[in-house]
Length: 432
Image (tube, rainbow, N blue to C red; front, side, top):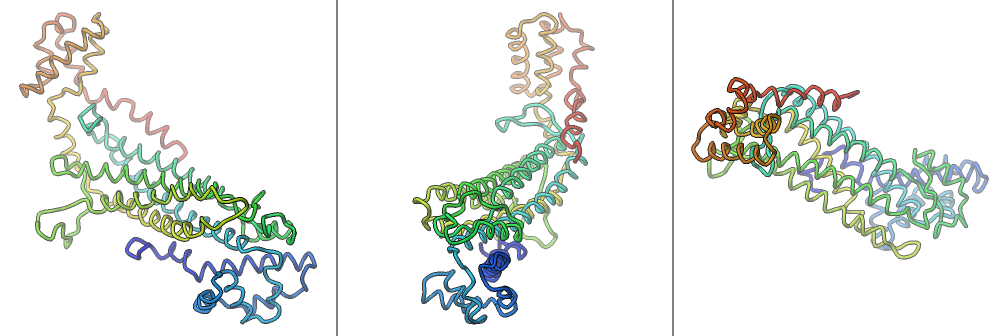
């Protein structure tokens, strides 16, 4: 991922220095277990740890010759450590190191992403509570439907990201496994006790059966979860973009005093951050299909997944980290315009009360079909003649013959649409 869209904390996880440091910890943990099992001489691990140094440039230089990254790594360590290094990697295979390391990097990245979601949840909840009763129009198919509140709208996103947090926690648990099982996963040359020791040391779970690679359905779940979270980000970003359109302008991204919106048009204030989030979401989701295709490997192992994971591992997690933090800041600093919401609410002259009138007509004896015809006729009249819906209803004898005018006027009450808002908030924020 390019630096423009990455933060150092998560980017460092995917740097070669950290990767090789994890490889060394895996090898040292395995050596410690072998010492305890009296497979290798006592004191080897201590000597290796005291002498071993990660030299990224040297490892890459060796790899350029041998064309094998794990061998290059072990050769580099041997150069520093000396003869004790021959006990490293005993009975192990490259995938034991590579897969365990990759899972640990995904786990480390996942922990940061969980913190990001927590930060986003704080921003969303604050706006939801603040605008619990801020009236705005609800839209279906992009068309005015019935009144809601802006806090209600925010609460839908709050709940969605709570679900995303749970999904990510499950995906992290699923991916947090360790395999030290040797060639084709049979433990022929390495004791299963070593695997258990390494897993405990690295705070991972033992992979029940690894063939030679950790099964890639685990990774498919992890990257699919990142894709779902990205889709939630995009849904939020699109909502902001729609509401910031000039003819709507119910919300607006924060715009700094020295900020410029267009190189050609000085008047422009564009939703560039939300548009950027839409783009990043597409990029993150692009990792899902390759992760799913990685599940189908040849027999006990091949490396068709390797190049894919070297790219999607860092790119998807780094991009999602950046997107979550950006979205949290967008929501935190969002300019919200309740007066414009109310103005937009009233541009249809009250026709969104149509269902309320419809239900009242059915309660006084009209069939649903008759009531629908009467209400629709008056709603369309309000559209066509720019008249108010309430005046059309009061002027319709079919209605006033059944319902007194004073009772009709009581039907046009915004409080009717917000009367259950407390119930919705209480169950959505329960124990949160």
